[in-house]
Each structure stands twice: as C-alpha cells, then as structure tokens.
Image 1: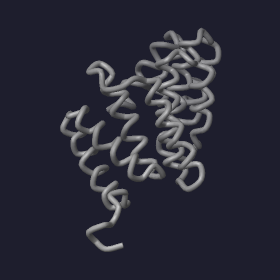
Image 2 (image 1 turned 60 degrees about the vertical axis):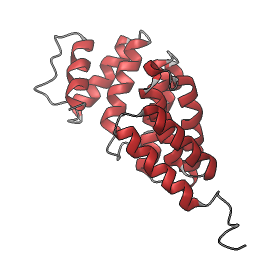
Image 3 (image 1 turned 180 degrees about the vertical axis):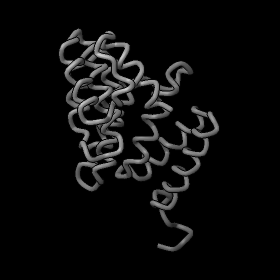
Length: 183
C-alpha cells in the first residue's frame, strides 16, 4: 500500500476528527461536533472518547434536535463495553455516571441506580454519583432511601456538616449539595 492508496480509516484520521469535534463542542457548534465525532467513531469504533463525545453532544443538543437521551445511551453502552476491557477506573466511572444521568432523564430509575452503583468510590466522580443516586431514589419515590444516602454522604464528609440540616426536607439538602457540586 502506497501513501496515495492508504485507507482513509486510519486512527490518525479518527484522532483528527475527534479533536476537531471536541473543539466544535467547546465552541457550542453541536451539529458540527456531532458530525465530526460520528466520523471519528466510524473511523475508529474502539475509541471510547468518540462515543462519550457523541453522547455528550446528544445530551446537550436535545433542544436543538441534535440528539436524544435514548440515542446517547446507545453510545454510552458502546463506550462502557470498551472501557470495561481497557479503561481506567476513572473512565468507567465517567461513563457510568453519564449513563445513569441519561437513564434518570428517561425515568428509568432502576437502570440509573444500577449505573450509579458501578461508580467506584475511589474516583473523583464518586460524590456526584452518590448525590445522583439520592436524587434518583427521591425521583422514584423512595424518600427513605434518599435520606439514607444523604446521611451516608454527611457521615463520610462528602456532604459537609454545615450544609446538612436534618430538619430540612431531603430535597433541600440534595439541592444544596447538587448546586455546590456543579460549581
């Protein structure tokens, strides 16, 4: 194979499309980002960054007609299969957290809870997963379960004592924690 006939499906081309797709995402061009990330995934379907980028673009682009939560789940499942084999704990946690949020948005609380449970407690996103688990339990109507998770967060120091007020409703404590964790 000469340089002239080299296939267009090289990992280098996928990396170029991936980087440009991420740049377009950062600039707010979700349609352009989606197009480039889909091309990157077609060129290198074993790169979980492509699938995560597509899912993130679909989640953020719902209002613009770029994607949907259900389609984002498909890409996150593909990413999860790859990171389960070759990824780090942090990559598995990130994908699991995003997958849980998608399932929660689709009101599939059982699947969301299962995804949040797969976030290792040693990762940087573990506090977010616990907060999401509590929010999900609350959304599913399990206030006692949500309260237990909030209590666990307070006991372990994830939710500071000064932020937690046992006299306030569970939702108020969760909302306070969620607002601070997004900052």
